[in-house]
Amino acid sequence: MKLRPLRLRDRIAAIVLLHLLAMVAVITIFVQQTDASRMNPFYRLPDPVKVALIASAFERTPPETHGDLARAFSDLTLTVSLRPRLPDPMPGAVTPETLLRYRDALGGRPFRVQVFGVEGARSFDSQPGLTRSPIRIVVQLPGGQALAVEQKVTAPVTKILNNFILFLIIVAVLDVLVILWLAGQTTRPVERLAAAVRRDELDEFEQSGPREIIELGETIRQLRARLRGMIDERTRMLAAIAHDYRTYLTRMDLRREFIDDPRQRELAGKDVEEMRDLLSDTLTFARESSTSDTELATCEVRTELAAVAMERSRVDQNIEITPIGEAIVVKASHLSFQRMMANLLDNAVRYGGERVHVRVQVEKTRIHILVEDDGPGVPDQDLARLLQPFERLEPSRARQTGGVGLGLSIVQALARRYEGDLQLENRKEGGFRAILTLRCGE
Image (cartoon, rainbow, N blue to C red; front, top):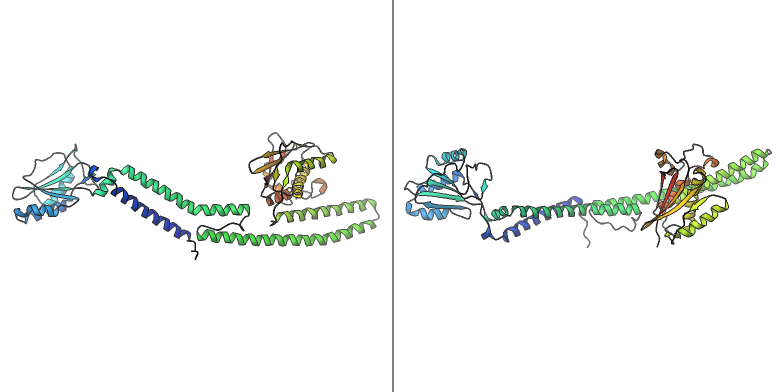
C-alpha cells in the first residue's frame, strides 16, 4: 500500500525533529568519545547558601563523624574535605561584592575564598562564572578544623567546553546540512513542476514532494486542460466563421462582375482578396497558437534556407544568407519553417530597406536564425507590441502598408509550438533584427 505524501508542515516538523535527534547524537558521541583524563576541569564558585548549610551540618554532628559526613556530601561535582586549620587570607582574590555574599550567608563564621592561578580580584557574580582556576571556600569549624568546599563542572560539560570551537564547527556543519536538505525537500519539487510547466510536459510529469505541491501540479494540469479546450473551441469557432465568410466572399467576387464601372470593379476585387488574406492569417494564428499532441517533425536548416534563397531570387529580392558549413536539424516541420521565414523576410523587406541578411548561430541544443535589415528600426518601448496579435506601429490595416499585424505573432506562435521563441531588437549599428530560436533535432 502506497503511503500518502506528507504535508509541507509535517515534512518540516519531521526534519526539525530529525535535526534534534542528530544534535543529541552528536553531543552523546562527542562526550563519550572524548578522553576525560586529558580534560582540564572547569570550576565554579559554590553557592553561599549551600556552603552555609554544609557548615551547619558539620557543627551539629560529633567531630568523629566529620570524615563520613564529608564523603557523604562529596559527589562528581562537589568536593567536601577537612583542613587542620583556616588558611591565611588571599588578598584580592575576589571582588568585595563576592565576599559580601558569603559573609551574609555564613552569618559571621570565619571563612576564606581561595582562587588559584588568577592574578587580581575577580567577580564570580555573573553566571555561569566558570573558570579553569581552582576555587575553594574554607569555613572555620568550632573545634579548630576548617571545612573546604570545591565545586567542579560536570565532566560532559567540561569536555564540550574544552573543545568548544570544534563543537561549534560540528553543530554549524550539521545545521547547514539540515538547512540545505530542508530547502531541497521544499524547493526541488517546485522547480521540477515549474520546468514541466515551461516545457508543457505536465502529462508525463511524475508528481512528487509535499502534498501541497502535488495538489498544485494537479490543479495546473486541470487548468491546462481547460485552457486547451477553450483554445480548441476558439479555433473551431474561427474555422466555422471563416468558412461562412468565404461563402459570402465568393458571392461578392461573383457579383462584382456586374459592376459597370471598371475602376470600382477592380477596387472591389482587391477588397475581396484582402479579406481572404485576413481570414487566412487569422486562421493560421489561431491554429498555430493551439497546442498539438502530434509528434513534432524536423527539418534541415541548410536545405530550407537554400529553398528560401531560391524562392526570393525569383521575385528579385536581395536576401543575403551566410553559408552554413554543416547540416543542422531543428524541431520544426518543413511547412512551419518556411512560413516562419516567409513572415520574417516579408517584414524585413517591407520595412528594412533594400538589403536583408540572414545568418545562423549554433549552440549546444538550440540554434538562432538572425534576420537583419538596414531599416530605421523600432522604438525600444514598442518592441514588445510587435509580437501582439493585430498590433502594428502603422495605424492602418491596409495590406499595401503592412497587413493586419499577424505576421510576427504567427512566427512566435509557431516557434513556441516547437519549444522555441522569437525575439526582436534594434541593431547597434542601425537597423532591425529578428532572432528566431529553435531546438536542435535528433
